Image 1 (cartoon, one colour):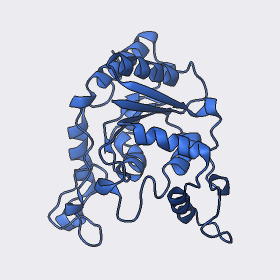
Image 2: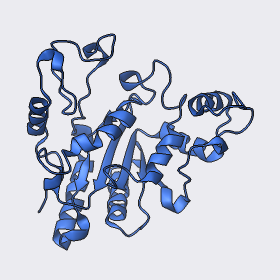
Image 3: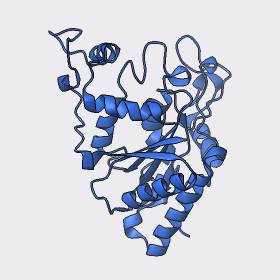
Image 4: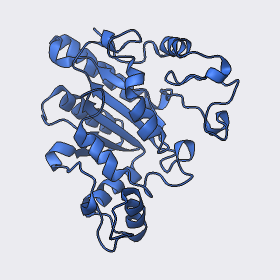
Length: 272
């Protein structure tokens, strides 16, 4: 299996760095090929703009980014650094994103990698999204750290359920482009726990990596569950934990509660 790790932390010896290094060792130990994109070390520019397009533009008078991305992809006009990252994604069977949660999302440098690399024409196009997305057949997984305890990310926690927080990434980026999305791995506030607890996170992550082929992916409703307005059909109960279906008499609270029960125990433990 070919694995791509996209690493987004400015400090190589951070706990994110330790998780990344463990993933490289464990995946290579299993006989997989591993490539690492270290965004800070590369000095990755996160800003999508006209510099991404070389050669003749689709419209030199007005910058329509999605149109220019599609045109550049078709004509070979994307910048060399974007094409290099796209080649890594194309070769990968598994893409692992390693990052700290900043402001309820990924760091800007990683979001900028997505903006530039997951370009229109390469990662998605008309009629090619979600289960028909360009990355169908590939798997993706988030490995993240937080600055606060796991209790804040529970269904009744002040920060909200972790799967709700990650929905824009899981559904809006990975599911949208066709990935099979594995359950995330979370190491809770590693900077504020004991060395033994940090080791327990590393051990749990290694165990997850050994069980990738047996890991049940996150559930996303198939196209057949939606009507022509792309809303869940009457009678289809939402199962994602983020959606709910009023046309089936379903409430947000009931959907979230059912989902929380199903997901219990699927993230890293809070202590050894």
